[in-house]
Length: 209
Image 1 (tube, rainbow, N blue to C red):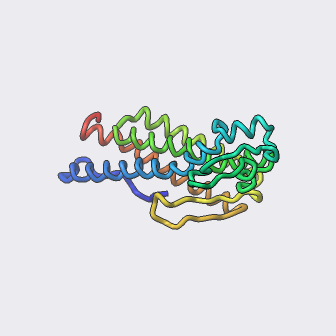
Image 2 (image 1 turned 45 degrees about the vertical axis):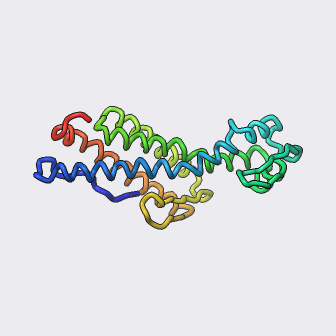
Image 3 (image 1 turned 30 degrees about the horizontal axis):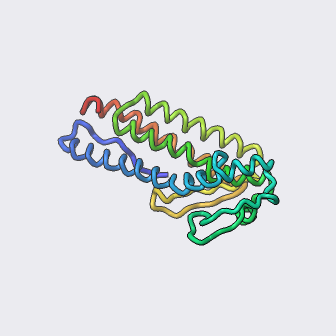
């Protein structure tokens, strides 16, 4: 999570320059979130519940052993022709439980990433009401996830993707992973709150976007 602090002195003679840099930073957050989602959305298109593969698995009651549906140029690889059953084996999909776990890995990051993108778009536009709306969505998501992990942290691993922040990814399991995740959610919450509070100063200086 970025440690960037958004506030600057809007009464400064350099405020116009600072505002330009601030909007440049916000645009980078929007662009980075869009790029971050690409691999997850691609997997969702291929393996998600609404995809052809997901639909076939649902019809087969998530038993891939009999899914001899031939997939040509599988996964976008020219000349890679194989069956859906073999693709399921590659991904470790054996039944509904393993499919649900597999699907959650690529599907669950999509919605919060879209909310983050929308949050920053509304911050850029100085639209406080909608910025708060997506801040609340992200806060509720973080709280729900923390509750789920706390039920049995020994079975959980927390992986933090820091690609957006040009930093190394981190991984921790058990209680350490749970505490790291909670700290990350706190930093994210505080950072979003700072952006929201700063909207009033910007409106006072620049007006509505």
